[in-house]
Length: 388
Image (cartoon, rainbow, N blue to C red; front, side, top):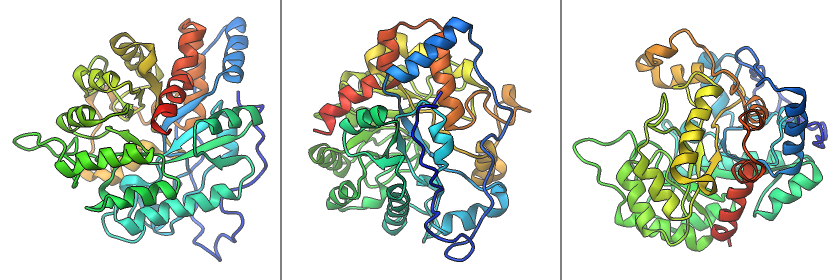
């Protein structure tokens, strides 16, 4: 799949001289583990090719760039050099027409110690934009029409997105500045609390939910035409955001309590769906592979229906589990049932993940209408309303 993509041969940041203009850090291979392809019959192979060619394929959440080969040794220098290379050729070997790229996010300490500062985000978003603008294959998307343009022209539409609004601090006008920089989706919180609300891993005696300023920020984002994500927000923050929103809201990457490795309760998904929004299934270090990933997909499909489900694997090019070990430190531990598994089977990077998502939808016998919706149709329909 992806053979019809018109990759132009451009290598990320090749307009500069690595080692002279910026530090040259060895990057990871495409696969951190053993490659895996969902097996298909000859007839299913043909259908998978048709599905990839005929439908607009949109990933709602990725970090679509290459990480260092030696994460433990090089991650700090890699982040601070401010340049995260996108492997355009690898992306062209997937069926993706559009990808929501979430930049460094929690690793955004380009200029500060802990990240998420305004200067960190501006640097990260601006540097990535410069690189994408040098490619003829990839381009920055500003609206839903760009998804269709990418499919028709064999290109990749890159949508700048952020997982937290922490960097706006107490200034609503920064939402407009970020929109002007190309950001088209932003989360309320990223696990830790900020001025907008309580983070998903920051609940102590009670969940305080969305703040008054957070409600104003949701309103401003929707007035501007920026999509609102509740991923990583606390349950009450999510419920509050859904209650105050006048347009659909989104959960760009999640795992349900209805399947192994998940953590989010049904009422959260139902609240997002009730706004008219879309919920995307994530990969994670807490699952073993694509079989479990599709258990979460099937659960969501039954819970909220095919009009509200999409995919946001949230993967990268590099060793995801090693990255988590470095970031979390000694407290990082896989669930007992995953001990000894060093990678997520069939979902190790955006290329492998998206080829396998298409193949698994075909293997599981989903009908054409459902496949069209979950691969990108739902996102196109709802974003058309939100971005208007």
